[in-house]
Length: 326
Image (cartoon, rainbow, N blue to C red):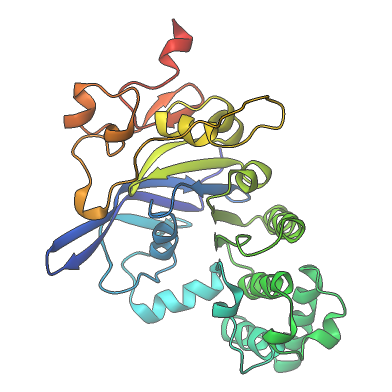
């Protein structure tokens, strides 16, 4: 087994408020190996993007890491001073965000922004950095990169801007890429190209990728493993095929049942009754218990930890695969 590149252990993120402290991430643990793509999926508000922000050191105040550890290549990074973390963020961790317009400065050409990033993190001259910038634009599939390098962000389409953002993330050959909803604002054909690009980067550079999304189609196409999040906790984690086809947690079963299947003649999709709880009203025990069709008394009072259920791990007192074993 390859040693994990990223290790997140018992991560807790809190937001102090006048009415008390809100626990946004509660005891999150997972790891990603070099060359592996881990998908993180769940409803809006589950804590997916917050997990990515905590890893790259970009939590918005007053949010803070209140417990646990984040290690990159064996080195703890969650307690580093701001300037040291800033150097790691570009050099060892690349970030791809949902809206490329918020990642690119409209006042500078994309070449200026790429060259600045490259010279900040790598010991290259201006001409060498420009040559590398052209290479990066070419490798991310931008046509005529030698000419496009001097264009401004508004002169690129949405898909091309996202390619520029990926080129920026790759500028210093990072070990880890955190991609937060990188395909959400793009049409389906461009999505497929961006997915293929992320897979290519992972394979060729041996980078670990954490892909945050709510799109199970993107997860199925891209990832090696997937973590399903609910109310700031990991509900289930395991290989993609097993989580999709043999889910153990009732929440994952509901998620998968809400996706239209091309090979099934179903008139109605399954739905999960209710809504995810607010941070101020997370119930005791299992956070999913008010919506769970398999709930019993223990679920309401005792929080389950992740336990192995078949090929996946699920935080559930009554996993769905019990019936398969009978």
